[in-house]
Length: 451
Ligand code: NDP
Image (cartoon, rainbow, N blue to C red):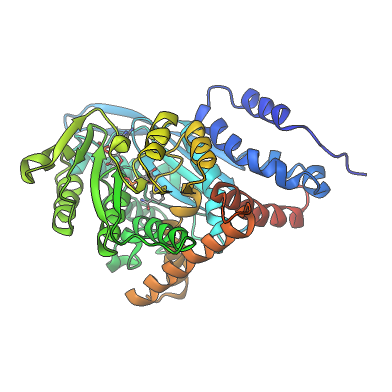
């Protein structure tokens, strides 16, 4: 007879902390999910007996490796690389690669854990993974970035494959880096397969992949607002970040008739009371992505805007907030300020941008608050569609893909409502996303037995 494991929440979390000492981001991500799952599985004996939560919170494997490369001056540089394969119960591991000096095993484990639930929510057959390196692409020449990407893939290639693990981009990894990594994979294996997503359109990429995360976060926001008979049109929005997700979220807000007031980067934020229009967003895209410039230069280009060094934009009065930069960029006090200033909805473009205290503030205020694992799933969803197109060796049209993205975001929203409705018209989207994602993965794990 199976021995059941009815540990309480605190005992469970003590174990997670003990086993993952010095990995605060991973512990935070597990806690946020476990808070909801404990309640949900209380009376579901099989999940306890099979220790499903404990097993999901332990990655299938963590591959860690050395990445050596030579800089333009002939110096040998040594970086760390990782691929965290968290769970493949419902499909091949899938999740981005991040190049940023803040990358650690803890950060990648949290991202791979979150990705598992997010991918399940899309309804597509994708497991959860994440990878990256503490390599800092800032200030590097194009040749240095190419050499680094090639060296990174020279080890990574043995752990991935179109039916095994399919990485994509993330912070510091865009189309150019995907191209260098795909080129090296193809060269080593002599195979042209859909082993990476976010590829160029000429070599297996999908239309709207670039826009999908930011657009998807705004489609999710529209879905939330619609539950109150409302919409984005005529509302003010505060957005953090100025990379892929932030600029495309801004673009979609503007297309739907909203007014974007801020963007930011690691140096601070710009506030443009006249609104960041499409031509200004185009300038930011070119300046940040192609020229690798700083967001503060916006103020010299567009009069009336102000730069706030070292600050996040959450103090600017708004109705909508979209954190689209990085983890833990919106803290408890920021959440209280947003609520006090009349913010009605928050849709996370980044992964875990709100810390646990902030999440609790949003929940207590009964805001329309979407966690990243639900609202930023549009990117991985279109990556999943890129995999399908690669397998079928065909390409879908832009309007078909736009419709699929909208449908997938509505589907995720519906799944959140199914598990997150609290009565009185309030939906706890965090709970809905956690339980909706967990149930699908957990039921697949039950089917496989103890593996
Ligand atoms: P980019 O590299 O394109 O942009 C990242 C942006 O965030 C830049 O403006 C960067 O500023 C800023 N940023 C990074 N680190 C910090 C920091 N520590 N403090 C303040 N600002 C910071 O990345 P993406 O737009 O692709 O990713 C943004 C977020 O969205 C991440 O959390 C990512 O995991 C998540 N995400 C991305 C997806 C995608 O499809 N790209 C899919 C799902 C989630 P600076 O230029 O100064 O570094």
